[in-house]
Length: 289
Image (cartoon, rainbow, N blue to C red; front, side, top):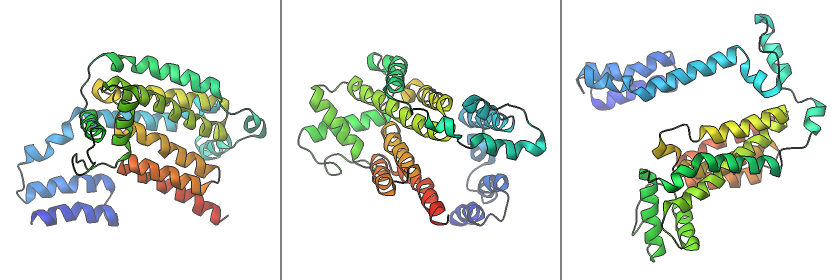
């Protein structure tokens, strides 16, 4: 079995779903050992990385929260317990927007200011404490090249799209500094605005309580990483704002504006294009109603 066949086997199994996904996930590793690509110890070592167990534990907690309906209880105050036969019906009933809730005022400037304060309090250590992040080092270097008359992708090269390097360059030029505190301050504002957009969508679906929870949980979640990632003004932080805006606009029947927002997200980082899937899903669903 060649290396190409070893790669093709799990890919084809994943696309065709001829095997259960947990089996497919292990097929590639087993094939590498059988084909002699690498020893078993080397092939299976990444499966024991601490980050893998972090994700597994997070998924288990998320599933437990879903099964016991604690998510709906937190969002809309629905009872956390239900009979097995009533789970689907109860879940559907609690996700509907009742008229009084939908007429309540959407989250305004008060929530946005609170999110700014919380985001700043959580991120202020990154403004004053040196924390190295590789994305920031690449971006700051590109920004310096741009501010000294260079051209992106010619005098400074990266595989990422152009918006964030130009954003760094503009921030450095406007504030007359090359300190990373400046772009981290900008990232703080982006985090607060993204949380506010999520709050708007949560309010539309489930009401005021869910809006406040969604906004605050997002802001808290952005720093729940190692400091070099949680405090960084990286591509993802700036991508999430237009990405979230695209989904919010699509949910409000503004497909053209949603498309522009997703395009901006993709120009921050390529993975922003993934938001096209829910946007298209919403539009196709409306077309069949």
